[in-house]
Length: 400
Image (cartoon, rainbow, N blue to C red; front, side, top):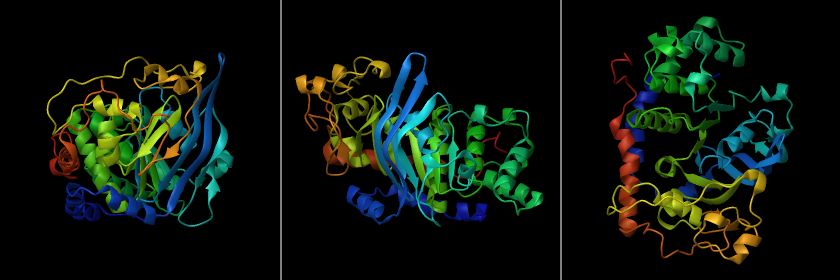
């Protein structure tokens, strides 16, 4: 098991900050991703919940690719299937959830591609934490409150590296905590003795114990305040840029994904309805649902306007509409939308599933009143702010 010292992380901070202040253009991002090897690929993936009321189609026809070093965001309302998809990709789903169709192929750095959905539990252990790790949204529920942090870290490290000594594992645990700005001395703490932000950072550190190739993050900043969210996001970006792991980041907050992601997948009713680059989804989203999400958060650089929510409620997955699941709430819906489900079709920078893709509703709020200049200013501000606000060193009294 290789290690990366805290000094290496801190030395790279200035470089990482500079890279996020400079806004990468869509074309540059596309070219970078095209050069990156494939890491994870979901094909025709279906996930079903088997319950007394019947079989609930939680995810359907999922096609996604993740490349090495990429940050892939997945956004949508509650019950859209985001967390279910994340658990299916990482093979962490439990009954009543089952993968009912499709495949999830992992392309390891060394070795042949392997379909994770076909592996028995014992063989999966080879990949968990070593290649694939996860950060859940509730650190309080993930960390054991009756064990000190050092015990939990040492157990994970020694489980996945049988050659390491206990003392070296303890040293490694201290290095991991310092990577996320927590003093190594807090290893003797119980999780309940840490603040919510420190707990979440400790969980991120634990997920990096075996230098994984991809980290799945399920709303890792939901339970913390806005200031701590910024600190955690900054540290995630710094660590990802230094260590090179890919991230699948799930959240309901599209504005957050516009700041940090290379690509974003939008989910609705258990299906992916649009995939695109952040710049494109910000200024020219093709699906009316994506535009609704975009219009529901305030802009940083545009004139003040009244925010508009999306009318109606998410669909009942046991009783989905015949055609497009979004049609009962869509201002552009026509008869075809209510009878024929749209398939994903290619756009300039991604895919979209909509019969009226790209069309606008006159009643919808203006999305980019300041045009391209406003979009670029928003992106620059969003990407620069986290790196400017936070360093990896402890910044509060409780951190010390």
